[in-house]
Image (cartoon, rainbow, N blue to C red; front, top):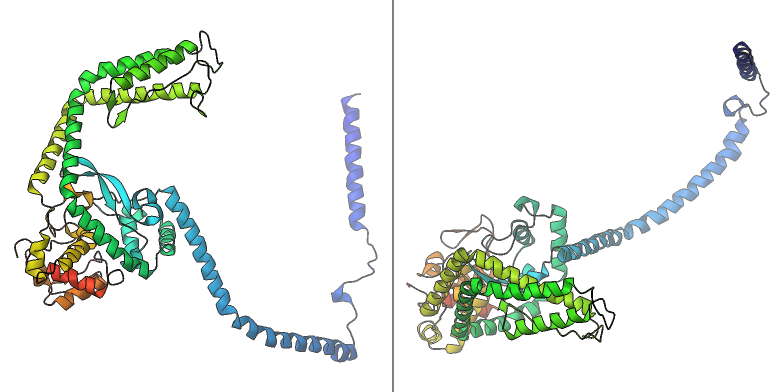
Length: 481
């Protein structure tokens, strides 16, 4: 077919299509319904009687419905709004619970936020300590919500408590901080339970004082062991590496040779790993708190230890030897700085043992301040250590060996040298201040200006306990009075 013929056919088709479109466009059809705007209007009789009456009747019925339903609606509005608030609070608590899990808050503050401990390097001694983390299940009896928010957002410097809010360079936004606060509020114990904590706190604090010397002796012994371990690392390294290399070689050859029990570890490898771990354990190979445990692998049993396949047990044993050898090698390679640090820490602990700055003369306090009443003296000292020393005695949270003299000051001001009597003209004023805490920018005492850091203890301590603490602080037994 020639090109001109094709063009002619296409042209004819286009012309025919255009003609069809034009004919459809120009065609007029009769429309049986001319539309509302072209219909004949209704008569006055239909508009002003039947139709109007129907609409008026409908309006009356609807007005009656509104007259009955609106008051009922508004009567239930309060409960409805409260239910929205409750639902929002429940959702916030749920989100806060997820944050607690995500950021492992209970790893420091204890399960249920009853109090716990966090690892921390004590700055004066450069020793890793177990820092006492406070209970938070009664925090709203001591702090206002905004004060709790401040500690969460900005953390507490010179302690393991990090900043969690964005303003403090932490990972949580404002909504998450609010959710966390909502969760904390949901787990608060009753005030009766909070008050009952005082007796336990006093007992724990007094036991700490009673066992302080033995505790510090143990700390000294542990630090001496650390120094000896660092000194021995270069000599211990070839021994550890020798055991490790034998175990690795055995595991690498586990796929070759006879495998009686068909567990993927040859008989020779199981025998060698058993021998290596047994010899290492017998030699007392240990370092950094980790020791080699003997592993028994039976070539005729795929699970020598029930529930643990021999292949897994073999790999775990080799991995443990590898970690131990790595720790010893790292210590040996960095022996000089590590030894200097450990020996400095040892000198600090020995000085603490010799000076016993933590010691409190309970009988002397009873005689000088409480008219010889030893029970009152013990309770006052116990209360101070349980509730006040965390902020007002340097090093208290780090442990006995790091504790300076009572009332030496830390986050809060020092309380010795008669400062309590200088700042507060009367014991009653001081009791009121301790009961209510400080408020940001609000004056207290003679020259004090609150920062909002001082919690109020009026809801967690009885009036008598507050008076005992004040009597102790205003007495003649704190240093320099």
